[in-house]
Image 1 (cartoon, rainbow, N blue to C red):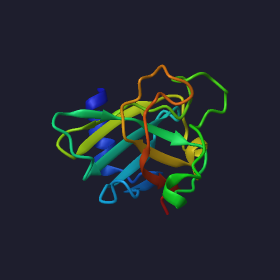
Image 2: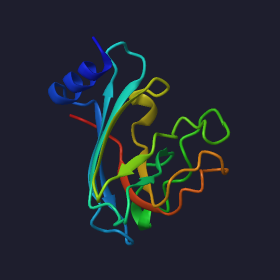
Image 3: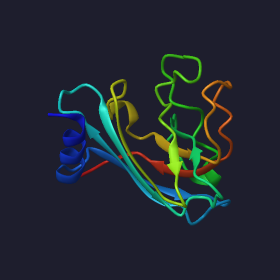
Image 4: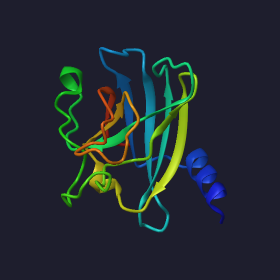
Length: 158
């Protein structure tokens, strides 16, 4: 099955194994979205699907950093999420929690991608974070991606 058909079939007909409801913080409180996590049918890796609305206004399409952080605690304006999920103590951008950027197109975004390095058990109970700026994929330790503007705790789907 080709990748497009696999993504479409998976995200439209299957229930994800985990999800996060992403909400904005004090700077952009209207941000809302869902991030779904599906175990790949091969058993290796996951499919990540994110749908976000009410992103920061921009005069042109922009990219926003998107990461999985260590702690699943979005309280206190996301100050307790700790650093990117990085069990191998790798340099940025090679943390397991470094995800692809979100493309903010007029306040909305949708993305689905395959990540062969993560599993559902790796991410359960952690947080998924949306940052205010694009990740530059260079600056240590987190890509100079700016403030945390959205957060959701990754939970199992019952």
